[in-house]
Length: 268
Image (cartoon, rainbow, N blue to C red; front, top):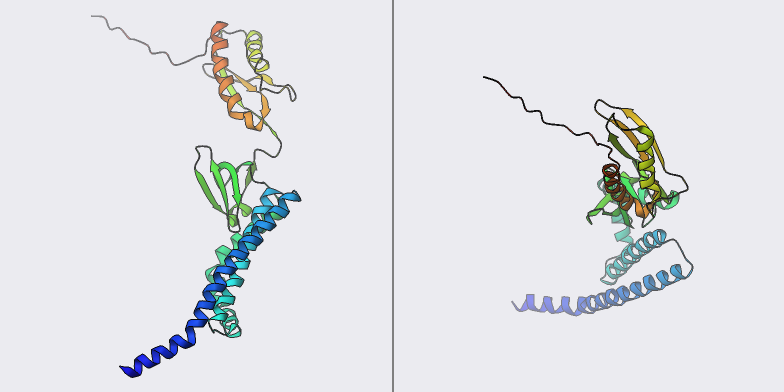
């Protein structure tokens, strides 16, 4: 028992200072990293670096410094960094195969930064998801869905798939279709629909809104109603024009066809 106790004391005397020093290095290093990140963020903001690029580079810098700190702590504990590097090198192939998805996502993030198909704040559709870009990280892109859901998509999938950016042009066309009875006067109907568009404060006059007959359907004459608006006003215009059109057609005595139930009376 005395022999094991003496051995334990020797280990404590040998490694305790190293462990304490390693802990101190980690604490101080983490604090310094936070200062570096904060100072870098201020510098980028002062130089008006794009917000999307800021977050990506800060994320990359943060992870790089933390990895360097961990290696320093391991070296302080007495592990040879050359041996540690050799172990990492020998395991490189296995790590690469295991993390090939993550590496593809990292490459995808770099491509997004280089070609900038979208930026933070843009409304986009990617991988079947629609939302506002909240953040572009090293491996993933975060969207805020229209119902306030957080959507996380791997950057590899985003960069390799189709991307629809609804914000890049600044304006959007609202595509609506309204059907009226065959008895309705086409000229009058077009005037009523156009008045709805031109009277709405958020409908742009340039490009000008259009109203055209788009289809002679089985039970209705369908009109393609196409107002333009600023991207942020899309849903306001969509819902307002839909509601105001119903009211305007009713006031003008123009019927909107709908299925009528037919009662069959049997005699006898």
